[in-house]
Length: 278
Image (cartoon, rainbow, N blue to C red):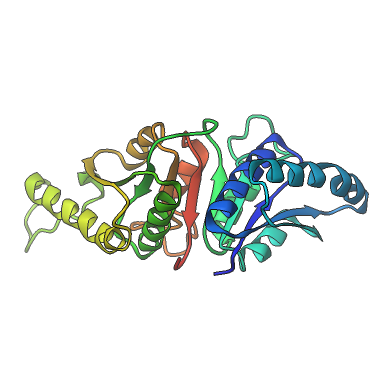
């Protein structure tokens, strides 16, 4: 991947918070930082270049002195511009809320659309300020989850943080096989067997990344609970939660899974959504 971290700015407090995080991520990676602003009206250009972009660049320099920084100003719709920029970025960072949204919206439309349609890892800055704690990895055993695991372990290593790999399961989402014409209502679920299977899935999903990052302290959690609620609760003690763009159980046409969406809207810390290989 390219050695550039891209951050989208729009003059909002959320966008400036994203600059802080992006500057730190670029410094840790030894990468360049590209500050990107998209404008749709020519009248917006001059004040952005001489105002918000300059403020964002100065803020990045303050957070990471010596960091190589470039500005990009592009004419076009924000999602289209950032999607194009994300194609060649090691990481794309945006704020959870932008300018122009309604006050009661929990997440800006650019963030959720970019999570669904962008390229590579996306980090959405939301939740409590300056979060501490482990990197929280949502494990589901899917191909997208494998890419998320690689990203989460790399992040934990960069930050010198522990990692919690969490796999949440429940009997509602389990297929219940039965033979012949037996009444499915009379099928007894073997909980011990299910626990063993899900614990094995968790260990298998984490094993290659654990071997690749032996310095990262790892805690495995396989919990029987409601998936979204359990992950959102765990996000209260995490510095970052990482999930794949899509997991098991989604409709084939969906580009962003329901668990990823719930985290983007409600997590108490920044959220990274990972698409494809890392």
